[in-house]
Image 1 (cartoon, protein in one colour):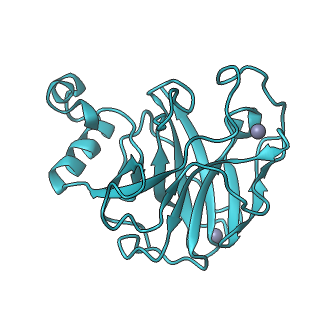
Image 2 (cartoon, protein in one colour):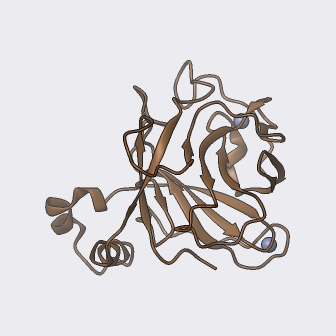
Length: 222
Ligand SMILES: [Zn+2]
Ligand SMILES: [Zn+2]
């Protein structure tokens, strides 16, 4: 089941929000199997979502769904898929084998970004419709941009329909081959001096198969 209600994800220091659950943004992790096969270092953890949070109405066999990625190699030149086996273990299913970069996205790229708590802010029906209309090109983005620039760019989002920099082909699950559901999208924003790639119009979109507990990440760029 897809997540009908969408939430923008607010990144904050611990204790700044009530009921932050235990969703985690970035930080070091010890997820078994979450190693980049090209870079031989831990995959970047964007988010770990605590599936006990009732606002996330998808089935999961594990308590946490981790959003994992690597920006410093060719991994993302094709859809990147993995299965969450247990709370702290994943198995990679599909990735692009390739070289590791030296100075990309930028020199001295960190191994991880500061760990933060995550707040879920429900997206109103009206805002959700604006996002859908922007994606479908049925409203003038310049008009919306004046009033609500926040809706006209990628944001960290869970469920609902996200603003997309371009329309991706919905992936099928690497295991069961069924069409996957949108789960979450990650923008450039970190709580550090620099963004993930220093480009506000790059986003990583995650699709989920609740039968197989698998995720597929697509990298979209404008
Ligand atoms: Zn890598
Ligand atoms: Zn599946």
